[in-house]
Length: 248
Length: 248
DNA sequence: CGCCCGATTGACAGTTGTCAAGGAGCGTGG
DNA sequence: CCACGCTCCTTGACAACTGTCAATCGGGCG
Image 1 (spheres, chains in turn green, blue, brown, yellow):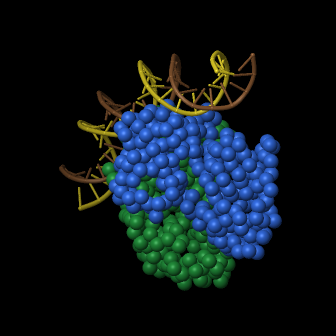
Image 2 (tube, helix red, strand yellow):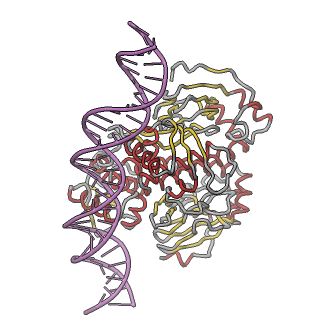
């Protein structure tokens, strides 16, 4: 959308919206200067493929805005999303030339790309950055394991409820909001992308969303905007422990 | 955790079987000495719980021998394995007191435990170790993502075939073996543990193994030993690309 | 206005889970 | 030495959930 204007322009890191959450979060002035020297911004339209699995890439990147996904596709077309990349998430693997998964822009996306070779050098010399990357990778691993429980053991309804709860927690401000508070948010994914995320078909996704609506757990505004009158009602549908303290 | 977890004597790191694969792989003499000062061995019998989810633990560890698992359990008893820990794999998360998953000994297991607080100090000061841990964590993340495809999109038969192929590749020597080579190996897991791994019930696991046997893809010797007359036949059943060249 | 894409809904089939019974291997104790 | 009990595994019958195929709806855009 409006990112196109800035495509090739470098903005100063200190003004960066993800300055304190991305891989550079703990970098000091000098370290930031080094990163700044090897970075460039790139934008992608919703639906565009950023990298194909197996392709060689000469950069790693942080997601500045928008949503991207990592996914695998089988010969016969079955597809499974294996990573959902939001603001400040990291793309690419240091010390590895090729990428193991398709990286796709789900909404319009802007990346802060670092040239891979010099980035690896900085990583090796800068504990602030390598430690932050380790921390982010451990968080990703925890998220992947949470996801494995969803994929392996939850029913379709629980999968949808879990997904909505995850998105709600991320998209809404962490203002807490007391028991029974209501929340509203925009789905960043199509039904098909949700299906790929959850290991379902898009028809089942649609049916389960209709079911949650019918039961008053959620309301729809258009196709993409979700209202949750009572967030605890939604949590009850996820199959997780009542105290909900399991996550993250 | 206060079972008969008898401590074993410290063996010298240079004689350690996982010296060159574990988190200490790239540590030099001096760094090894530091690790040696904070380590102790602990053993667990097959079936014993090493740590319960949520429990506070004062150590992190490397698996020296045996097989352990990470798993999550839902209120109603549904269980999903989210990590399979083999020789040299790392247990625990630095800078976090509690553990997010149940850690269970699947076979008899011996761990090399490092006291957590001092380990964190060493980690912060020793790039050789933190870089190795980052690398191992990235490998774990890739394995988890591969696993997500299995859980989300594969049929029961494909899941079993994929699982057998994974174990076969790990348990048998990497002698390559030309096209159509036959392999044999021991299953390290019960049918129930396999079910927990693959998001199936133990009945379905049993039926699919019987099906593969009936079709001549595998042969059984007792309940646990598997013979694969033609490994490519097994690979054909996994649903993966014929060239199998997706990874690595 | 008409087309296209994403979403919804229905009918039906197939895979997998559930419940239940029984078999095989193994160690213990009479 | 054999019986017993235990654990792990296998198999069957049936039900339920989810996938498949197909028709339709609705909004956005040329």
